[in-house]
Amino acid sequence: MTKADLVNYIAEETGLTKADATRSLDAMMAGVIKGLKKEGKVTLTGFCTFASKNKPAKEGRNPRTGEKVRIPAKVAVTIKAGSKLKDALN
Image (cartoon, rainbow, N blue to C red):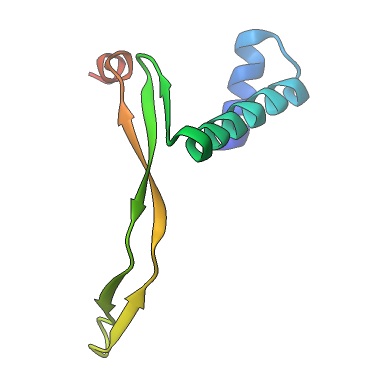
């Protein structure tokens, strides 16, 4: 499902216009990003938990040449499914 598909679904389910559904989805995504930056974790009870994790710099290798390459530190995001999401899929 793409963002456009999700916007269409939200518009159909809620009776919002596509423009309003787009703004709602954008606001939700911005809220998740803001929460991750500020607190490092966003929980949508029963659905999922987003968490940010600091990954330190490390040394890797170019698989073609075997040359050592420095991989910079970064922040990764993990998503853990909640019970309602798991139940809906099983």
